[in-house]
Image (cartoon, rainbow, N blue to C red; front, side, top):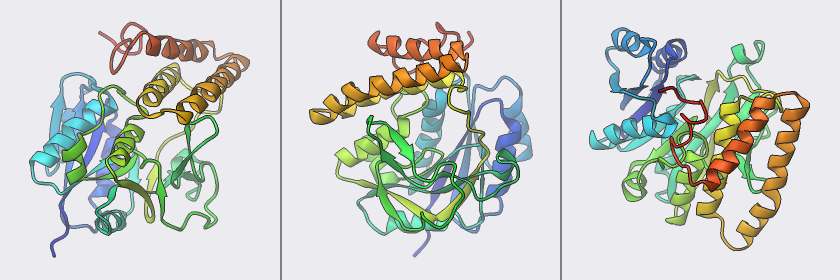
Length: 313
C-alpha cells in the first residue's frame, strides 16, 4: 500500500534562521509521501520572502497579520486537508528532525483507528544545552495535582526510562501528527487560545469523541528552545499560559475534576507569582494577574493582547 500523504505544517514569525534550519533537516527525511507547508504569520522582517526564495519546493502561504500559533497552524491544516493529505503534522519551526522521525509516527497512528494524535521523543537541541544532545524536553505528559500538565522526562538526561509507547493526555504541538479524519470530525485548533493549551484542547476534544493520543519514542527530533528558569519567564508567556489554563478548565473540567482544579490551580498560580516577585520579575507577575483578570472579562484568542501591549497595531 502507498504511504499515507502527510501535510507538514510550520509557522514562521520573524524567524528566518530557525525555520530555514528546520526546512533543511526536513529535506533529509526518508519518508516519501509528504508536503511541507510554511505559513508566514504576518512577519515584518522579510523572512517569509527569504524562505520562499530559498525553498521553492515548499508550499508557502502568507497571513497578513500574526494569527498566533493556532491561527497560523490552522491555515496550514486547512490547506493540507483540502489538498488530499491523509494526516497533518504540526511541527515547531525551531525544531530539527532526524531522517527517520516520521515513519514511527505514521506507523503508530495507522496501527489503530482510535488514535487521534501521536507525538514523539523530543530532546533539547545541543545548541540550547551547551552541546548536550541527550537532554529530554518531552517524553509524553501527565496531569499533576493542580490539574495542569507536565512533561515526562523534562530536563533529564535520557537514560532509557521512556522507551515504551504509552497513551497520553495530549500530544505536544511541537511534534503532533493528527489524524485527518478526526480533523474533519472535530475541526482544527481552537481560536480561543492563540498560543498555549491549544493542542491539549484539541486532544481533549478528540478524547471526548472516543479517541486516544499516543507517545511514540521511536520518533526523535530536537527542539532549539531554551527553558527559562522559574521566576524568569517572559510576561507574554505568563499571560497566555494562565489565561488559557482557565479557558481550558472551563471547557473540559466538570464535577470533581472542576472542584479539584478550582481548589488547587489558584494555589499553583499564586506560587508562580511569588517566584516571579522573588526574582524581581515584576512584569511577569503583573502579566499573570492580567491573564487571570482577562479570563474573567471573557477575553479569548487575540482579545486583550494589544490592550496589554503584547501585539502591536
